[in-house]
Image (cartoon, rainbow, N blue to C red; front, side, top):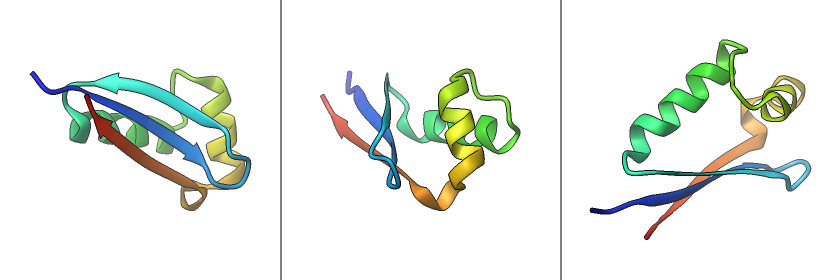
Length: 64
């Protein structure tokens, strides 16, 4: 089974949220849906998203 490590990186500050999943497309959608709806479980990531906007974030991943 293939897994992924992913990062949501704030391009403004360099800070990053790190996670792992086996379904990268679904996980990315869930993160951004929660962030857009101001309901993300990571309060730090949510505050940064609200402050800087989606354009300042990159979602990157790698297989393991």
